[in-house]
Image (cartoon, rainbow, N blue to C red):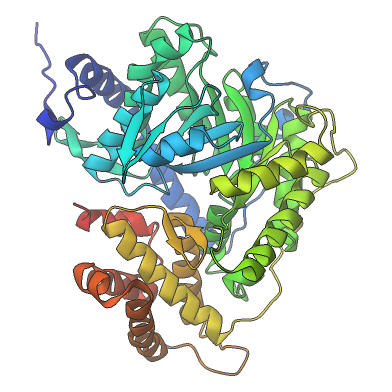
Length: 526
């Protein structure tokens, strides 16, 4: 009888021995062998679907699943600890962030291996160590003479693994790179499930960038496999799905249905959603979008999407979580700080009054403000009882073009922030505080996609300036000078701004819009 040998190659294996154990690798290998081929097939289906959009097709409600949308069914009950999620804080998995976020007063901390984490091996493995220590209540840090440790009461931990499109070059199984999604999920699940269950908790996740209900089915299969592997009940895992692609908003019922034993809610990932909107519809005639700052949650297609998430979630008895407030407190400038907080207040009031059950913030200083707004307007744990049967969102409303203008300032801002973020990511920092906003990969993707689209469509600014490669090249040179002043000459010289600007320029001038900037940049990440 022939025996099949599995070949496993791990780089830097000796550095993180508490995480890279033989048993953990056996679990990862089992996940890879069971699910990687089907993951790659799903990615191939994305390419086929994009080709159809490029030829003029539009996203639509799937005909084959009409019965799922029309029938009365609900998801499995949500655990008590996840019923009140009025304020959630998000951020990368570095040690200080994990402690501060868990202590922030928010109900939930989403520890992020995805858009706010540059996936270097050190970042990923130290992140797994940090989360393991956090689950065990032993996480501490001494830095600059200050000691950080957990409070008695902390936020509930949810973990966001990477999306299906990202491989990890540090582990190969049978000469194939492991999926970043399976690596992040698998290591956290393996090392923490027993401890969480002993505490009366469970492994809770956020799932990013789903484009189709079949991808939700894939994740459900992963969950079932993992629970069976550890001989724990099906439904122990609970997940919240980020609705951050335009195609997913047409398949909300279907995504919930595929995960109905494991799902706790949907979240409006607004920045990735705008990026996906551009990416999917970019080749449609007359498709154009205004400056990034002019696309807000009051833009008709964004409002329609968020209302549909609320209505569908509440129909299926799960939670609808609102979008991110990316503002960072501005020191020594009370006037600008007050204006920024007023924007947050307006945004959060709109969310809670529309029926959202919670919201996101990026900085601990925003937690009290968001809590105050939700406490005032949502006296119950959530608003699932508000079904929003008064609204009916159709396909055209989900696709309606946002109104606005393209300005020179908007073009320059996209270039400036795009280069700054990519450079930060290449230096290993995936959550970059830029101009008093917390930028992650999603906001950089909007900047890149808009610039690409405007060039492709030969658009003009509101002052009549034609957008050309030559204009971009001029602006890149000029914005790099501004960046040098912003970060300081010493930081500029020690950084990777030349590489970042080359990568960014190549992507915005490319004949085809690259799927994800992180796929290109990952080749250069240490």
